[in-house]
Length: 137
Image (cartoon, rainbow, N blue to C red; front, side):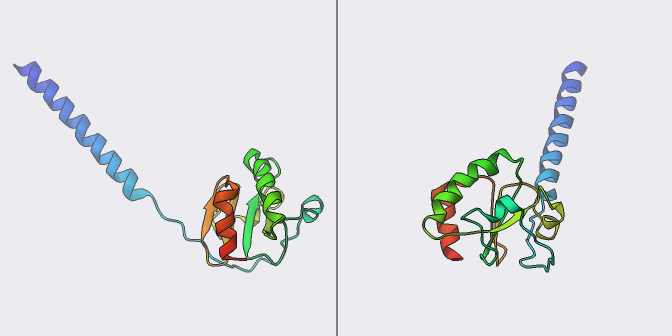
């Protein structure tokens, strides 16, 4: 009989610890709100990037990318298609200049951030990216 109570006690302790951990992880997640337009003086574009038809320094959506990012390479195809329709993004090469990411709380690439702080994180298909860019064209 004591073994049964011991097992029940152990099971209850594991359950309580597990539920506590789950609750802690849910509460511990913070929403990151982007600082829409912090002043960054030197946002130079790499030579190869400057010739891309989808990059414009005056675009209202910033595109954080890195040349060694697999998903950024795939995103080029989507951006090239959208450039044919007149869409462009402001290049923010955090591979070459990692300091560009910090003011905007960018932790991964590709990431798109609009002037108001709205963002899309990760690889975006044409169907997902086009409506986002249309809002800020």
